[in-house]
Image 1: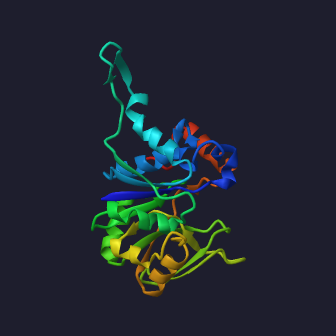
Image 2 (image 1 turned 90 degrees about the horizontal axis):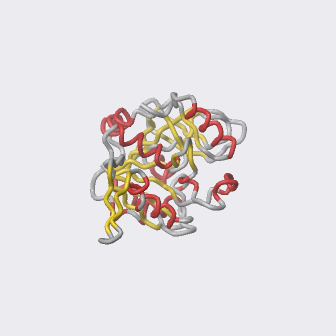
Image 3 (image 1 turned 90 degrees about the vertical axis):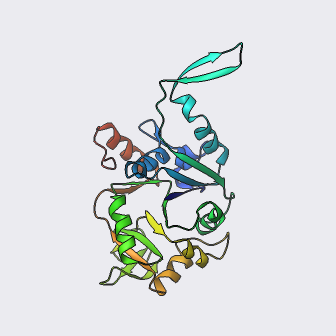
Length: 255
């Protein structure tokens, strides 16, 4: 199964870091947050990633192109012009990095990588949030519910859009940031059938708006409830909190 990671935005609310690097490469405990997200999926046996890059995409490409070299001892034979990796500490990951455009919206980015996804369901998440999600349970739930897409619903901290969910765990509406209302919100960590991409119009389409609203209206969006640890990295304060959790040596997003 493929794992699609949205990693192309500007990250303007974290400009202290993102002036020089894309947000998914901002480090938590010395490793990019993107690496932490991939480690979560890898723990559950998902090692085939498609990264939807955009802003400073060349740095994401460079990170993975040099990954083995940076995480190994090296034997450099200057005479032969060869480099051998010694004691390599690398994950068994297959990473496809696609430049999906500088100003493409999230839905457009998903549409642009469709040719890399095949005909099976795929996981989808954002490249700037961490959670203690049981990915196997999420996948089992998606298969059992049988809808075109599953969204992970997390308790609202009071500043995000609200999901309306019926007794059959079906999302009936998606409302963007309503005032003075609490409930469950979009926590990312989707499972999506390829047919769901058909509801995305083009590059200017945000996945969180018309596509999710259309799926909800058609009764094709399930909600997997997650009440454990979940935290997006939107601000420098969020980054510092995640750094502190990592330094505690028992970060809640690791298994």
